[in-house]
Length: 226
Image (cartoon, rainbow, N blue to C red; front, side, top):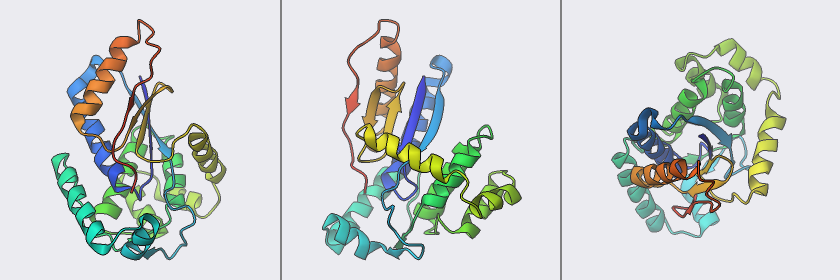
């Protein structure tokens, strides 16, 4: 079973969704062979390199008051804790394009892309670091066992830029307008940072239906990207 996890490093619900999905996969174990791939999506593609104050930017983008944003963050902290992800303070919103380029490069090393994805989510959502900063990206690459010099060469060039943009366009053309979006076998969609039980039930249902050729895609609503 192929799973495309379409997400942005800047998306807090993507951190919740990834941890929840992995809990579901651990419960399923080897019963369903899984190929998990990470696909790019940018929530703030026009964000400048210096970033922007998170409360000001998110308040303007989503029309929310500081009190509403604080309430949303409390919900995130609770949902994150339930799946083993700790949210800290995120004072700024950053551009994540270079993070996606480095993730695309890391895909060539078995297991490295998944490690780097977790490291990036933690760096931003737990520690408030800039996930687009080259110093942060190089440090995380090294912590994930990747070749730091090669990672630096990627970041110093336009490597994987066209690939990332093409994949982002592809998912937008498929109707993806919020993340996380979990796309299974190119035809089933589970949207939002769902709890582990939701992912597990959907994956088992899809797997059970495969031999019979179920013609009804699964679409499960959930939390919108924010």
